[in-house]
Image 1 (cartoon, rainbow, N blue to C red):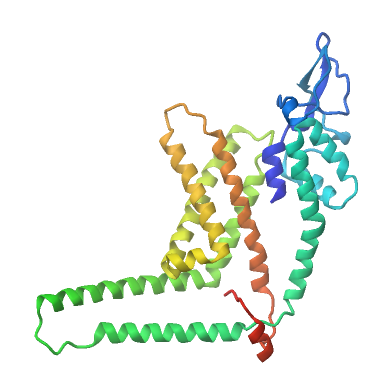
Image 2: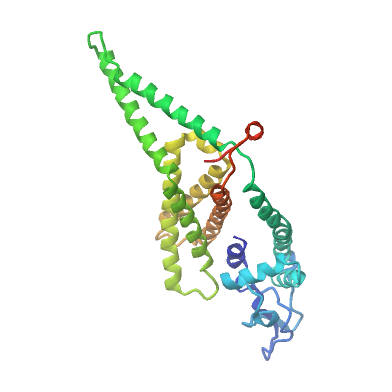
Amino acid sequence: MVSIFTVTLFHGALTGRCSDLDTGIIVDDERPCGLFDSGKFLQAHQCASGTYCRDSGIEPLRGYTHYNDFFWAMVTNFQIITVQGWTTIVYLLQDAIGFPATAFLVFYFALGSYFALQLVIGLLSAKYAVVAVAEATNRRSGWRKARTSTALVQGFLPSIEAPSNDVVQQHSRKGLRRWCFALSQWAEGLVDHPHFTHLIMLLTVTNALSMGMEGRDTSAAMLEGLEYCNLGFTIAFFLEMLLKHLAMGVLNYWRDPWNILDGFVSLLGFVEVLAKLLAVGSGTNLSVLRLLRLVRVLRSAKLVRGVQGELHIAPPSPRGARLMTHSTT
């Protein structure tokens, strides 16, 4: 996730070098400069008088540290969380971009080196955690049976009284309720199916990988193909949100924190596509909207939830059932 962010934000930023105005010879080939003209406000390195900052094509540390593509971004970010030589990378980005990059990498250092390791420990301990999965499943099964029985009783009881306009309208409303109930049951069965969950996880991983394919030297044909992929992922995730609304209801959908993340990301993707369609032929530059799709990378955090769901959970004990406060299906 962080590598995709850094490729999008920092690609090509570390190749700026201070060069002589007359000869173009690089004065200092080790220290980057503010290639994107960040100025003194961002505290990036500014070239001295008689020199200027130009794209030299030289990456620092013998070319092994840069964010021009997804693979090298992974290598550079992994070096940061190993706590070995991470300050060198921070100083390089401070010279090339300024303090926003420094703040971002310091935050990532704290997140990656400590909290990510705690996450691994949490996943291992979750395998042996005691949860009331069986109780929650039985409760939901009983709720479904009660809901089905109520619908059958309300929908198929014969009418003894003579038919009237009110009765006809009532039967029409009952028919509509049965149709809506059947649609909700179909959507619920589809969303709860393991294949549907695996498909969404596959789309999430593929979406993250496609975003990581965009780098500094990406061709125009590749960029066009990635745009079509982005449109496909936007439609797929938006349809997922609609199906979950049908299956769970609007209120229940937005009560779940993971669904809030999904809905927010899906709506942002829809806004991006809609803005592009409205701006066709107007000449408006909408490149800033590309940053909105970075939020979609956060969907990758749901993979942690998927891993927890795949763990073999021990049968619940009475004490564990009392202590259990939340369960996911």
